[in-house]
Length: 321
Ligand SMILES: Nc1ncnc2c1ncn2[C@@H]1O[C@H](COP(=O)(O)OP(=O)(O)OP(=O)(O)O)[C@@H](O)[C@H]1O
Ligand SMILES: [Mg+2]
Image (tube, rainbow, N blue to C red; front, side):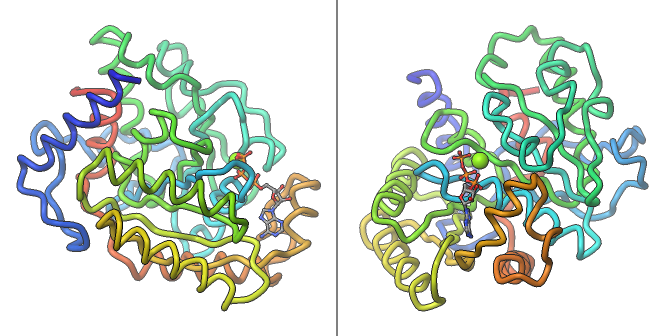
């Protein structure tokens, strides 16, 4: 953990040194300016989805929470579907193989995961699983931190493989709950970090906890933090929770948190989970589905934090290429 904290501080130092603008400007300088020419690795043609490379930039969104069970995986998967409906090529990555959340929610059992790519047993293209819903999923490998132990050759290969994902328009990373160093690494690296909470006091406290840790670890970086309030009975209830959180974060942590939207408590969600199909598929017009579509619309209107794209995210996660 100490190593991780030091790594994070190093990221902060580098970023500050690179003349990062203060929080809220939305157009900071990427952490790594050099050696990033290979992003949009589409030139190699391996894009996992057998589609032509996209012209645009890949947007990387992490979904995280303080407390477990507040709706991260549902949001990740259904947001992916909402993006797919807009014609986007979307990859959902399960950041933690141990939980295998995304796979369970989609009733799929991928044979391979990122670990096999790390070990050079498989290519990214081989482990990427197309779903019936127009999105692709990648099963994660637990212990991303072990990347530090890879040989230079293995690490280089892994980053190159990950680069092939940069043909996607959107990569959504479903992280595990809480403030493990891996989660922090992902948040630090991604362009948008969506924090999800429910109106429950314990969930709010834990969400505030993770925001506080982010604020402490990263100084006053523009983290692109966005808040979703899940399982609410009314828009007013959500707004109250969001106002409280964004005010406290601003006042005490000097951190800008944007309120992205809310999701109604909706019986379709648990039915969908039981049937191992996304609620956007079970009923695209149910309250929860409409909320998620609204969240994606808001997301599309907001500027992602400028971080230099996928390749530089991977470098931040795994050290210099
Ligand atoms: N909007 C909602 N309406 C009704 N039930 C919901 C809603 N969102 C989530 N749930 C319920 O909460 C459960 C947990 O959701 P989900 O698995 O997405 O949470 P999670 O944050 O990913 O959990 P974990 O921390 O274990 O990964 C779901 O199985 C569902 O029953
Ligand atoms: Mg989950």
